[in-house]
Length: 256
Image (cartoon, rainbow, N blue to C red; front, side):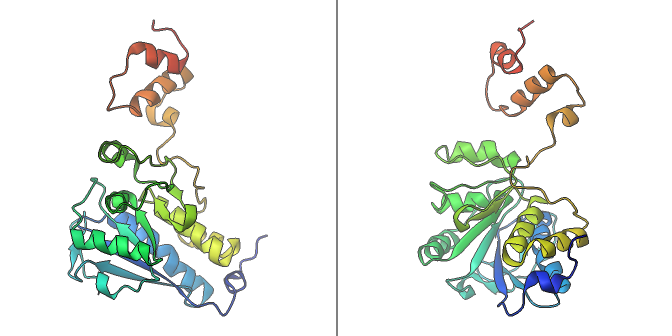
C-alpha cells in the first residue's frame, strides 16, 4: 500500500512556488483550469501553501475566454517579477493576436532569466517572440499544421507535454493536468502527485510520451492494421497531396 500521508510526501519548510498565467484573448478555460486545479488540490492535500497562482493580462484589463466567460485578472504584466514563471494561455482556434508590448515583455522576461511555458496554442506567442528556436516544445495537435506553416523552421513535439530545460509546454486540455502532476511529483514526491491525481479523479496520469489523440484503431473503429495505418497516415498529412503509392507503402500493401 502506498503512503497516503501528503504532508510527509510534500516535506515541510518549503517556500510556495508561484505560477503566473498570461491570458490572451479567447483563452481556453479547460486548459487553464486543468493546470490550476492540481495546484489547489496539492495545497489542500498537503495542508500547506505549496503553490500560488495568478492570472495576468497585458494591461490588467479583463479578458474573455473562448467559452464567453470573462476573467478579471489578478495583475498586469508590469507587476510580474523578473524571476516569475509565466505560462502563456491561448485559445484552441490557433494563433491569437499578440500585441507588441506582450511580445516585448516575453523577450525581456526570458532575457532576465524568467521562466516561461505555454498551454495549448500559447506556443504561437512564444514562437512569435523568438523563444522556441532550438527548444523542445509541444502544442495542441489541431494547431500543428498552421504552426508549421507560419514557423517552418520550428518542429513541435507530438507528445502531451514537454519539460525540457525548464520550458513547460503542453497540448492543452487535460494534458495540462498531466504536466502539473509531473511538476508536483518533481517538487514534492510521487505520493503527493498520486494523491492529487486521485482527488482529480485522474487516476492514470499520462506520461509525456502518451499521444495527444486517440489510438487510430479505436478512433476509426477498425481492426485491420493495414487500413488503420493508411488512415492514420492520411490524417497526419491532411495538408499534403499523397499519392496512392505512398499510402500503400506506409500500410505495407499493394495499391490494389
